[in-house]
Image (cartoon, rainbow, N blue to C red; front, side, top):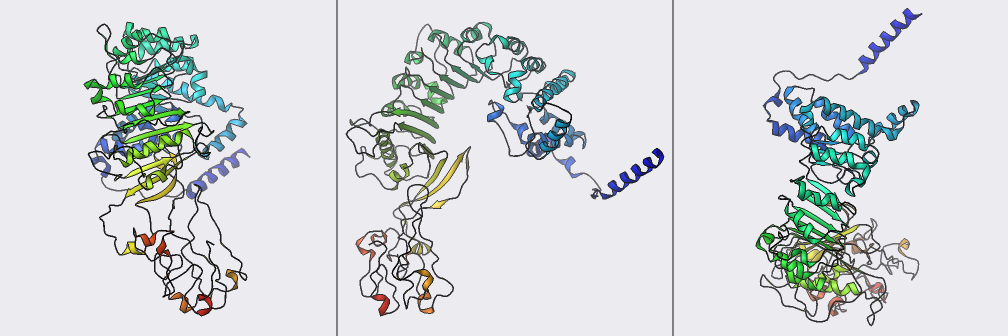
Length: 617
């Protein structure tokens, strides 16, 4: 029986091999051998996108690509088996930025989970097993270990496997970033071994954080000259003196980004010049959060230094002593500032005294997130909030052309785009020297207090001296800044269905079922009106669809022009774009009895001409 079973297994194996698809093999010279390594590296980066991740963020915030990271890593590993050239390039990418994922983000995970369940394997131990496998690899091969510069792993893996993580980083001399447990930043005793291994073996780290309880560890940076190549530093709730802060920051020569959060002793004195202390370093990015001691006076003194003005490009102020009415004091001093973020909670309206505009000739992106409580301001209308006056001030700054290079604007007011549609009647300040009025391409992202996503609204200015094209004569009247709303999901991607809001008057189907109209009884019952109001999700209403002609429309009515703004089209005023006749509610919106159209009036016969039905009555 065993002998026959052997033959059956071989025949079954041969049958399965015959069922596999056969691919033609390429003959002749291999054209990929002529490709330089840089081109191959670029091609392989699309096979496995996460190997090009060089950010200093944790794995939860630095996911690249939408595919399965483990499957992509497997495909890139298969590329190393093609030839020697591919081996060298692909292997360098495999160990440049290492990422350990807990699961497959594809259907393969279901198959693997079923197999682990049969073998009684805990799925939570899989990432730890992969960490130990990587640890054995870098310990055996120092050449591969020297290529690792970025090492990222899941949150629970780095929290529960501190010893394995410490043994792994010991073999990585060129490591620039590694995901560390939270206790490491607050000097938790359980992370002391990991700290010692990083201090002795990984001298090329570029990012570090220090939280409450790590004051002595932070001060040791200046005494032991540790991690001199730090580029990003995050300080939170550190109870340290300003003297220690400035000495430690001065010991980091290549520091580029600094984040200060909830620092109780931080005030404007940190930016003042002193003969006995080193100056506050010039940074590319400065983020200050929940530090009430920092005001506009301190930032003005900081930006008065030429070395700071030439370097600073990103500034973020969240709930600090810097208020919106004081931004003009130092924003104009930052001659290279590209991104500004201001977040403030206000309880009073904007001051009544004259305030200069926020002026900058280099600012590209502005996050203006001013919020207030839900209660209305005292002595003002019931629907007015304190934050509304701040957004009016921002709109006046834009209409005065105080921010001529601004391209993207984020605000926490869903009604802000309406403020940009037309210039305010009373502008607090005159237009700047660069030109008058709001005449720039601008992308506005709005978000209300109850909204989850950003709503995207582009503004495209239309010059007043531009003559309308013939095609434009057929378009409904639009304001000078065409508005388009979309849902913005973040991360630079715009998703969602767009809707163009137009103020063209919708068409009424009242009386369409009467004798002579030709639309048939399905369009109405007697004198009953069947108008539908459809919301656009932003407080307004969608325009009625333009296609109103059913297949059975009579020839007399089909000859009428149903194009937008046509003189004979129901709901059109017959005006050109930008003319007063095209505006809703204008006196020329209705034509007289000399051959024009009135609401509820189809020019077909005398019976329909007597109809006085109106959608707007």
